[in-house]
Image (cartoon, rainbow, N blue to C red; front, side, top):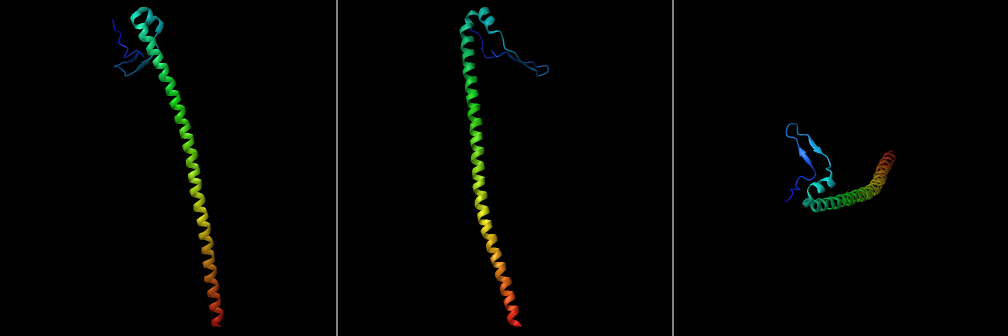
Length: 114
């Protein structure tokens, strides 16, 4: 007889109050009670183990990717801030020079009129 493994996780939705039961069955007893299912249970458990390992590897890779993206973002923003500050400083110096020239010209005209 074939065993339906679609709900092998034993996650049962209780329709009365939508409570989810998440209990691990006794896999050895399942194999003893259903000898034909023993091989399928072993395959399922191995596949789940592989999936869990892949999930952990993927999660670690995503964490590493996020860390590297944050580092890159900080470097890009720092470069943008450095460029902005450089140009801002130059513009501030030019503005100061223009103010100084205007004031100097005004003072010179005032003296020449006297």
